Length: 284
Image (cartoon, rainbow, N blue to C red; front, side, top):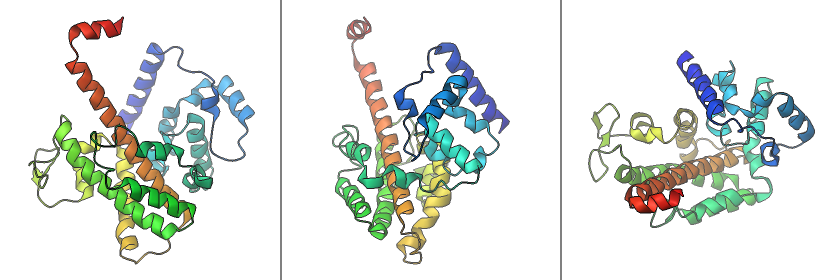
């Protein structure tokens, strides 16, 4: 834990040393999706205490380890993330954050992801058979058919991860399968595993480098434990607006990570393949 804290502090010092004009008070920074937000108070707080803009500082707080949205909060505007953390510290209910993001059917960002160049053929095939199914989940959510939204979302989440693992194995520097058929897992330890689960894939191979440890913990300890009781018909209490919204947020989170990886991979290949004289021209 101390090593992690020192790493956070070291990264922040490096950030300030090389980005002296990083902190700016902008409308985007103040934009939150939580109701009844006093934006003037937020602006005043940031002006008088600029460190509030650094989301990394909450990682040093003693309550951070028990905060259930560690995997999600770093994707939010800094002020929103801090507000959620403070609500949690004060004993408030933060389970509605996902539903509030999609209230009134606001799926613009996710809809854009479904047609992203970096998530569609020929760049990737993870959405080829699933794009319309994701749209079905969104339609069910809008129509308040939460049972269908939750069950279908769970299958999409796992299916996307399995398919992407095969793509990742072919294009990443680190292999996660021992064979071309992707039937034997190659663990980070160097050992192989013939019978494996999605948890083994995320926790014990190089794919875990793509999804941070907080997401992997959430996926393996919470989401995956929900899967069997729900899909086997034992749990019917989870078909709620909050839970279906959380599953949609998980789909969006995974797709955004895959899009980022594919985009960076393309940029790296272009950089490697461009002739030196073209690179020089681009730098001018």
